[in-house]
Amino acid sequence: MSLHPHADRVTDAELVRRALEDDAWARAALYHRHAPTVANLALRLLRDRDQAADVLQDTFIEALTGLHRLREPDKVRAWLRRIAVNRVQRRFRRNKLLRTLGLDRGSALGLDELASPSADPEVRLELRRADAALRTLSAR
Image 1 (cartoon, rainbow, N blue to C red):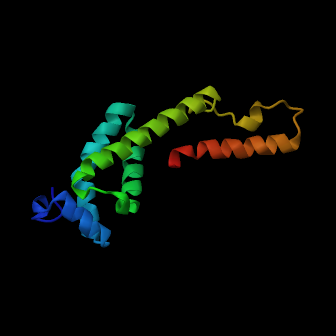
Image 2: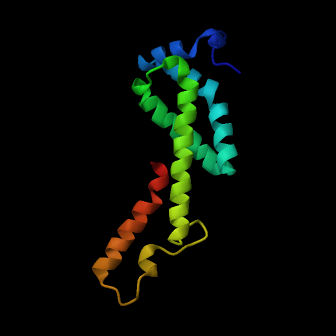
Image 3: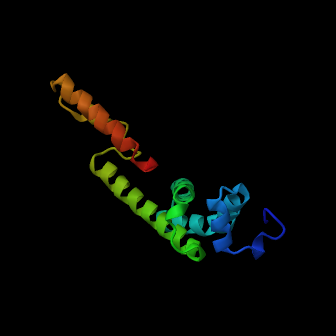
């Protein structure tokens, strides 16, 4: 379903040009045109619907806020796919790091709880901060 009866006639390059001029319709049209491709790519790579939905959202946030960096507006689809793949790779690295540290979804323990009970309170505080920072990595 199209946002506008003639949306299919508008090229990607024209949508990008309009979106750069803060045209909300053009931004929405870019999303509606390319979101299925990005979502399917993320789902194929991640095999997790929730993570794929996060990648979709993160991809379009990055793309729409960084649209001025797109050098070839007619290649917006390939550019979006590249952003999505980069987002998936970051997620793989983050998940691997969390598993290595024992902080994946199955672990309720934080880094400070893994420290020795006799650890210096300053060390525990730093571990708590590091734990909080690690848990926010998916947002980037």
